Length: 263
Ligand code: NI
Figure 1: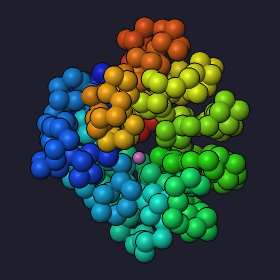
Figure 2 (figure 1 turned 90 degrees about the vertical axis):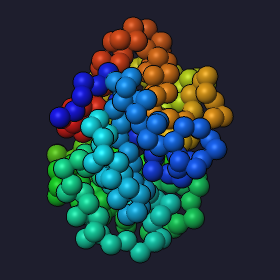
Figure 3 (figure 1 turned 45 degrees about the horizontal axis):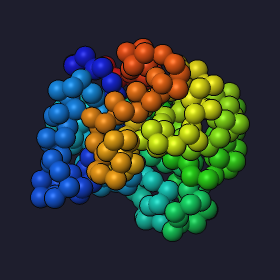
């Protein structure tokens, strides 16, 4: 049973060493999770390879209100990946999606062919298990859209969220046309690049995330990020949409519960 959640950080990496008990960066992993849950903030921890996917599941098993997404990040596309093992992990009852997966043309040590191959295998896994996808896309919207459009044409059940959306309004509309959602992070609190998309898109397709430990919002910029700070992201969404914080919180949380099937 999930406690009543007021907000959900749909994308964080609390298994990273930045949250180890020995870290000098601030509170430990367990403290960070507890203070978010105490504030009514649930979270989805995201795997980037098999090891972090396993760690995500372990965190989700430990806490009500914490869920896991398992998958292989495009930065890890050159590792040898045991897809049978990934499938086994993906069937866990607290795994609510597949990812983060996609294409990355910015910070990439892996080739396009490797990236595309493991991306497509994960799309197929998501379809097979009927779970949504957490998409990572950096400067590759044209290619990602091409792939997703083709799959969506054949499999109407394909569900995707474009995590850390960093495209423009034109690209946003392409994803929205496919029925997908977009999630936003700390940068919306200090850059106006996202205003047009957030202002124009339906509130029913927006979710909030932190991508902790990265990309902390104002007023925590430069510090280690944590799920509690998703409040700042939702505050900014409310401001751009000219609605109350409560309304933005309620709707983005409802979106996350519906999209990931959180119970
Ligand atoms: Ni991430």
